[in-house]
Image 1 (cartoon, rainbow, N blue to C red):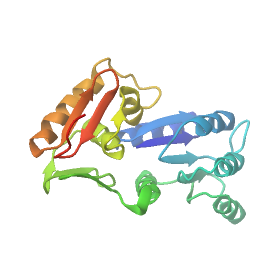
Image 2: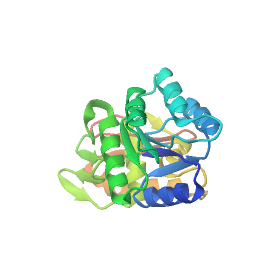
Image 3: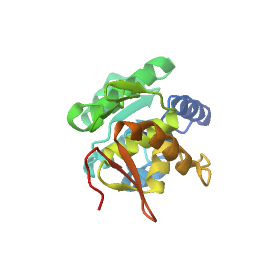
Image 4: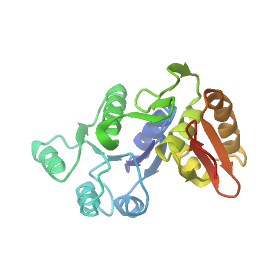
Length: 226
């Protein structure tokens, strides 16, 4: 799951980034409205945490442009403005939630989880591929009804593969799911995570095929390879 934080306070932005990464999200951060508008026009996220008082382009305008482009990504406004008119305006422009500063971190994290659940297609947080299921909200994987012990990175790889089940997922897409812009990705890191994940799911009949030069393909039992 990828989150974009749009916040011009570097201390707060750094704290939020560290906290959300510790709870297994890939997090990117920008500090002004122009950067945010450019990034949101060209990249996909599962959630946007948006400050209002931004340099260059204010938060309300960012939100207005985002919705005009047809994006339905959940948006959590995070701001020091505790005025009813601002809350109403933000919600009318298409924000999904509104949290004022100062705030308690556990509450923010709970709202983030709820918004991501709400934003998932069909309203369901459970993905499935044959006997393999993944609860993206609870961060739990099951194979034939039995839990699988997976690391945070392995869960991220599995989520990316299951969201594109039956399609090839390349290394860049996997890295995008697992890491923020400023996180270093080891040369063989993706291969290591895929290898570990493969060892845990293939005994249950679910296959992760390596498509040489292209990426990886998750297949349910009984699928005949091309």
